[in-house]
Length: 140
Image (cartoon, helix red, strand yellow):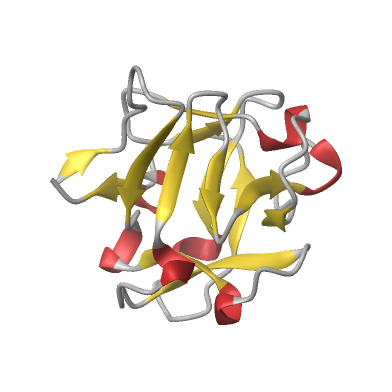
C-alpha cells in the first residue's frame, strides 16, 4: 500500500479505492449520487461508490460528484458528503505527508468518527492529530 498522493499532469487522476482504519474503504453511502449523501467507512467491495478520482483542481470525486465539507464549516464533527462539483472552497482537498486528507479552507482532516471500524462509520471533519483514524491509503 502507498500513501494517497495527488497525480501530476492529468486533469483527473484515478485513485480507485481509498482505505482507512480497519482497512475499510471511503464509501458513498448506499452508492447514491444524490447531493448530501453521507460518506462512510465500508468493507472494500470494488463498487463505483468506492472508486475515487483526484482532480488536479483539488477535488476528490466519486459517482460524478465531489467530496464536500457541508457549509464549508470548520467545526469538528462537520458532515462530509457528496455534492455537485461547483468549484467552491468546500470541495478543495490536499494530502499531507502523514496520509491525511486535508480540507484546504479549514486545515482540518477526514476522520472516522470515534475511531470506529464498523460498516457505516461516519466520516467527519476533525482537527488533525496522530490517530490512525485520520490516515488514508490507496493500493499500488
